Image (cartoon, rainbow, N blue to C red; front, side):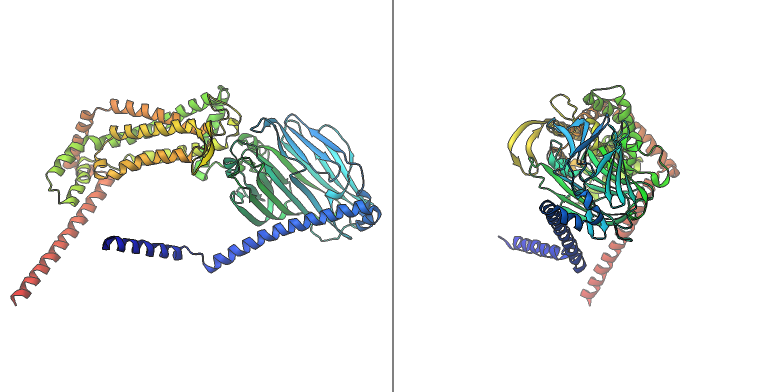
Length: 636
């Protein structure tokens, strides 16, 4: 190892040490992290305590019913009964509600199945808890312990009543026709003698979210606990990764969401959610056989006084994350009634979301009316998108073509400059472009203008429930990856399968990269040879990045690249290089005779060139003065 290598290793070591100190968390960050860990631990401990108390109460009731009834005060009469389950059902959803607890214990969506073609159950009694804590004079009464008396039973409505002395608490349900929204009214009557006044009524809602999709890793990425503040239009989420907790106030709704479906508790009117402690935990997403992907909980303080005689209105949304459907629940809403459930769908940041909402989704929905095969629909959608972007692509290509036809002149001028004058040789292209009136950045702006649509498509496909369950060619589900070979083992950063659309996309991308560099060669590759390898590096990276993505997305990119190659060939042979060079020379002559015809970039480049020459002249003067002073000193 020579001296330079030793110095290099020492410098790298010092950089690593410095980087570790630079990125070390501050004292405040460490304290905040500790508070978050302690808070999450407290939530888990409280869950354990609640479960132990729940088990103790159930054991006490079974062991000594009479004393248990005395412990529960006026609610003691509702502690016994015969378990019976009632069903509310319409064309879309089936809700099962037992008389013990009086809240939905199982929800099945009729028009959807899991990836394994099993009935799609959002939750059942084994993985969800929904309990209201009533502040009774004798202690906390849990509605999950009470047997409710059913009345007004129909196929789409039911009323549950739990008596407490001369008062009662009533859960009234109505399931409208052809709707995923279940109306839930809580009615309290004459409970002043049974409950403590000015006490908080808590709602404890927790659920383990079952796996429903082919890729649990990808499903986990889009599963989040969401919430919306009352009177605001924005929707926030807890982190989709790891474990997270948040304490929030004044909420309109809380949503337990996975990739394509949600369970949402909505507070209507003035019965807002006063306060909530929200918690989300991610299960091991490396286990593709895992039964659950997330564990959510919401410890909620309800914004009503249970001792008052009143009707508090809530709703449950049990359904798909379908954009138009979620928007429809705001059709007749005004002011604070607006739900904005459509923001449960992650369509990208503001600009990209607008593109999806205003262009991509309406176009997709329009094509659905005419095309039933979603593979063909994506092809037609891709063609339309490429046609919309064609003017930008053509403008970008034309800018590159201008630089290409100037390449011989650049090479001629560079050949006249000695090789040791590297800086002068590198400045030749800009000088040629400047004199010819060619903007070397002219191809970037059109491509930047097209980027919002390209990124919007990237966010649209993984969230489009319309693709779920629809097959095309070898892909059995366009919302999941299209595996043609299950490896039986996992390759780091790649996965345990081979996605053919992703593989085809990568191959075509490599071909397009090589083809595009040949068709648009401006000489930059010779000046920056590493750029050539970098251009090939990105398609290879996409092979690893997109192997687990929805096949609808990789199919879209595959078709888009094929169309791009065709467009490039058409543009290449529709642009006459000799005529283009003639136009450039005419424009250069015009600029020479009329300086006012120069573009803004040319003026900027000229000013930069003037400053460069001025700096070089000043440096030469300084060097000549130093030589002169040195010579005078030697003479003395």
